[in-house]
Image (cartoon, rainbow, N blue to C red; front, side, top):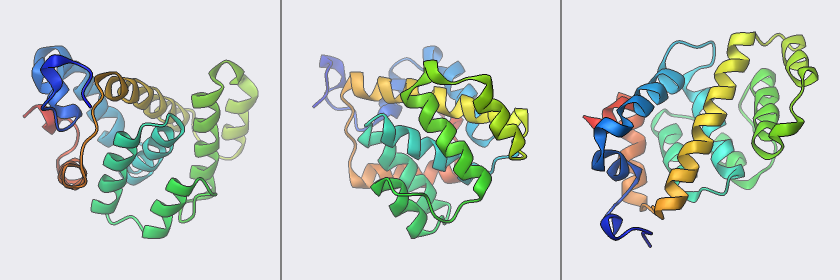
Length: 177
């Protein structure tokens, strides 16, 4: 159920953005840069981190959108199921597993993140830029999860599939086109 009188017919978060495109355009441009721009992390790896963070934040809508995006990207079903059931994620590198652990700590205990956490990632061969890219994914998803929750956006299986396919093919900035 939508939480605002004007959002009763919203099918997804894109409707929030389209209500005030000038207001949300910079955010979507930043999303585009973080999620599909240049990075040592693949687009799929960033989507995996986004799915994990959304799961940790209890945002069913975002979990389903990112899950559908990963499916449209051809990510293995076993990887998708481990993201959903909370078990150790299969089908990703040890570095991505380390980044998921870091993303979890940053999401659930942000005040507990220390230089030791960053140094452990660097010691595992992860560059500072990749760590920063992960921080941006975590932070953006926390913001988006809160937008979705506050607006009461629910989505539907058809919506998730459509948006996931679009995000996989066209990126995030396309949400305002």
